[in-house]
Amino acid sequence: MAKEVAVEKRAKISEAQQIMILAVLGASIFLGAALSFGMHMIKQISFNAKVISAEDQSIVAYSNAIKQTGICKSPKGEVYSDEELKNCNPDEIDVDDIPGTLRANILEDVASNSALSSVSTINARSCVNQATGKDYTYEELNKRYDDAKSSEERRTASSLIKSCSALRVIPDALPAFKNEEALLASLNKIFNISNWQPDSLSPSGSTSSASFGTGMNALSVRLSVENAGSETTLRILNNIEHSIREFNIDRATIEWSSGGLNLQAQATAYYMDESTLNEITTTIKAEEGKK
Image (cartoon, rainbow, N blue to C red):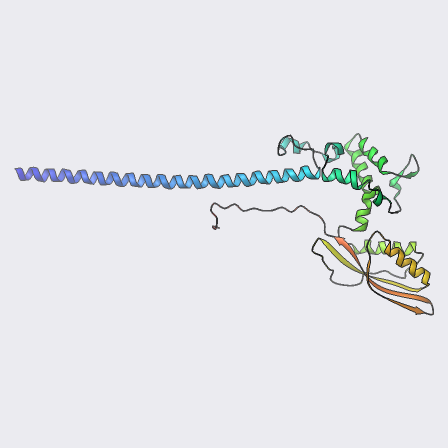
């Protein structure tokens, strides 16, 4: 009898131990799953925080670019709202509303620069003030811009400032793209004002152009003056020297002939790469070092 009781107690203890082991095992599995889920959620929260931070930085960068260029008026807050961008029209913005911006500095400082305005040019008919019969002054152009009543009038005034004020000198001096036809036209104009009619004009035929690492590039051109007098040749060279567009003569050969003076020269002109805003793509990783 005592032996049966002992066996029964032993069986109950063994059953209790099994239950305890199963309980501990279940609790361990639950705790491990909870810890794993918690770590996963922490990583997700950290990753999402990185993404949101990068998005905020991008929004601030875009807003600063818009604000500094003067495309829109300054935002009420740190960045532009959707409503502010929707209602932004550059043609309706007065220069006084965007002080210190790139656009304001160009229109107020560069366009009115007396040194650039002193460069002689033959203006188009659109640059003539019909009221006075003379070329527009910067003050007249600026007044026309300020007095514009509509975006169309302001756009027209802005176009006149670009083509009739000192701003016209900048693309003439250093174009923003490679244009051999415009280069030859500039050279032909120098010949014309020097009272010389060339037989032909052509680029040098060089297949490569130098780059200076700052966005400025070189373009070669061949100059040819044949059977001209010494005064004509000197006049051409002087006009090339005083041209607003740079013509750097690399090498030249001058020969006397029965018909007059012959000049063969190789020159270099320059142009800039087009200015653009570079967009940067940033990859956000949950953990550094992982793809």
